[in-house]
Length: 223
Image 1 (cartoon, one colour):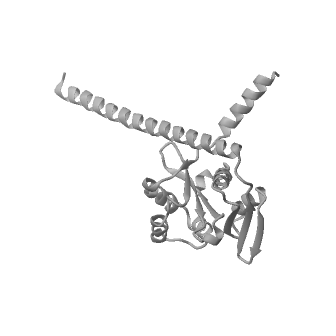
Image 2: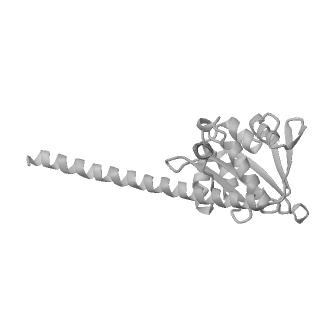
Image 3: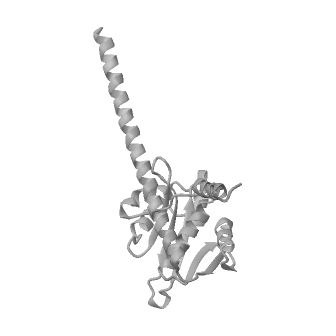
């Protein structure tokens, strides 16, 4: 096997395993709310630390600060959010280099590594923003989240039913900055492709409906 073919296979493997993660904005509030409301009671409990009601979710979504914080989402082909993460930066000047991470994943999308990918994406951005300590507060029974934190090298401290994970981040470098730039560009391109595909399918359905109506009209008129 030549070096070129080995490199090509490596790129192909990375591409097939790549998950497009898009930065969300104010216009995505309805989709964020729909995603969180689609979670079952247990998943709401693990995500928020309590069995959040639809009203409480609406209140949470309405208070999301898209200027200060970063909210990430993974979209399916129907442009529905199937997984999202919230990287919240500290509002306390004494903890200006700290940020908190939270994530949720649709039940049908479990086991695909979405939570871990969102975490890595948030880590890269946090580094590039000068964050030195990433904090995760989770219920001790939220083993998937704590597993992601431990795998990244975080220190996990348990206090009864709750656990805190602390991950020290290295300073930003050229690699982390280029990585984030490419991730954002590719994710935006993926979203545009999905949006165009959805528009095309809607147009195709409209044309099919029109043709069906014309055929039925001709059949009824005996043409």
